[in-house]
Image (cartoon, rainbow, N blue to C red; front, side, top):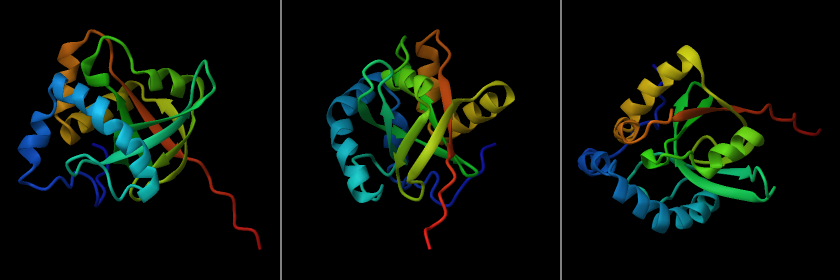
Length: 171
């Protein structure tokens, strides 16, 4: 299992049934169209303290377009695995991978804004036993991922974001 941290899974109990029900495709599509553009700006401005989600752990990952080279910002659910951050390329169970999936594959150096995990990271796709362990942790963290897996034939990929070493402060 992924190592739990103090801020993981802190959805208030009265909201838990609502958040779990949000695993439906339509709700995800509405969220991505309405709330995602707000969170794209709000989360970096508040360093993850505020977002439009119902108490879920959301980060904004800044990545470079695979073809365009333009900076993009994408709000995503995340959970921790030790010092690493894990994000799931579910796209609500769509048949295609999300655009950011291809961007991270082509350009794995990213910047992240979220409560307690802001910084620069390097992304890689989880594989083998690590992938299976993290998939189980992902479904435990957000049951909607289990539903999404039934909607598509593609393998839903997980990215592990490893913090980049910070340069020592100048004296």
